Structure formats: structure tokens, C-alpha cells
Length: 160
Image (cartoon, rainbow, N blue to C red; front, side):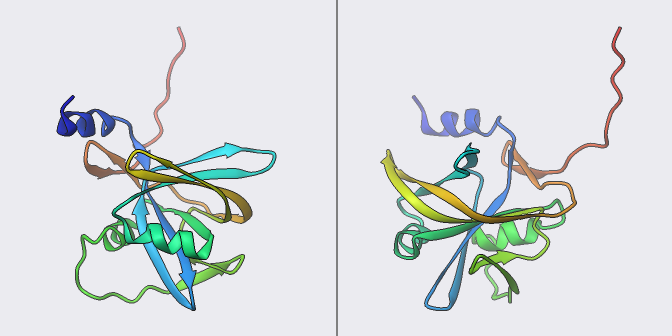
């Protein structure tokens, strides 16, 4: 199986865009990711997937905590910044949720403590127990076929 074709196939699944954040010794760190999902309501659990080459992998292993920031459709710059697509230095002002740095304006912020890690292939899956969350109004930033997207205006469907 060809790696490029596999990536293309996976790119046909539209995802939301998140920035995963953590803090170590008073320094905030972030990484853009779209591998995030809820796992359980009782207890409240989520999972994120971090590649073995990502700098964030060691940071989450050390801090044992992370926050997921679900970006709004006006936060593409955050996604690009934390993905390393914007090279110049930018100041990011973080809020705090359960002692973790979170991005102001994200439509959802979920603060978690790591309860388990699973190495699968070239990624580590972190299961996080939700410590706190916050929800804001807004539409999500989406990623589909290698491009940023936003929701289309609502459409009416007629049942016949």
C-alpha cells in the first residue's frame, strides 16, 4: 500500500482542527492536531494521538496533562502557528482551565489528566480523564482534503 495514497484516503474524512496544549515549569507548549475524539461519558474520557517525531510527545509524557482546544472558523492562524507553518515569532495569550493553558476563543476547551498511554505504530494514544471543560458559541474550523474549510450555510431539506 502506498503511503501517499493512504494519506489521501484519510484526507477524505473531514475533521475538526484542534490545538493540544500543555505546560511544563511555567512554559506553555502547543501543537495542531486533528486526531482527537471522545471515548466515554462515564467517566468522561477523550483520546489524542501524537506522532513519535512530535516535540509534544515528550512534553505530555512529562506533564501528564493536556488540554484540547477546538478551533473556531476564525482561528486558522492558530492552527498554522502551532503546526509550524508560520515561522515568525508570535505572542499567544493563553487563558487557564484546570491549571492548563487554553486558547481564548476556542469553541471548546477540554482540560485532561493522562490516565493511560498506548503506543500503536508510530503514534502514542493518550487517554485523558476530563478535569474541566468550557464551551463557546461559534462554528468550527474544518480540515478536508488537505485544506482548511468552514461550514456551509444551513440548507433546508424537503422530505418527500
